[in-house]
Length: 251
Image (cartoon, rainbow, N blue to C red; front, side, top):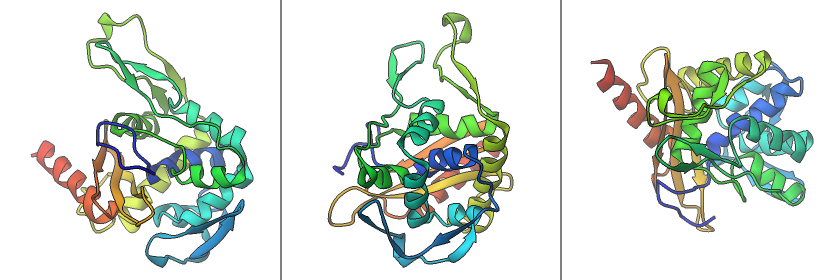
């Protein structure tokens, strides 16, 4: 995937939040046992975990907390393009935000074009695109329990906004799994304050393995997205940025 500026579209592993929502909506729970091998073939695409991660058979929550690509690529293919597309739409993808000043990009989940593309899309690679605003909205939807279209002006200046409740099983499951990311997963050493929930992303964008660093999350009624272009590891780079941000606004 080509490199993109932070304000534009970019490949993203925090998209696993959207994939996890599709799995939870399909009947899985954070406790559902799944496999997380270091390498797998999903569709006909060979998928690797970052830094050779291999967890064996673990609850879905553990695979999410440790950002297991092989798990989510495999399960995304099983769930199918229609369910994954519906999940992306529920979080605002494939549209535009009416923020009150101009329209804003809301992310793309195009037709993956078969199981190979679906495996990539399930971990936020391939044709999936988003920017920090779109991913902050994903985190906000989990925190609030409903997708709400973002705005940059007073609500009275807008004709209305979209409010779309997420299912209770999706909200409950995602909240617990995103808390696990911060307490015992890939962001556990980032210095995040208590009460933070989120998802890291280490998104490869070229054949040389270079990566963007992501962290999306929420604490209380504040949702956010951190994107560091060419930043490397999301847990080591983007999550500490979020920790500093949350510490500053608390003080």
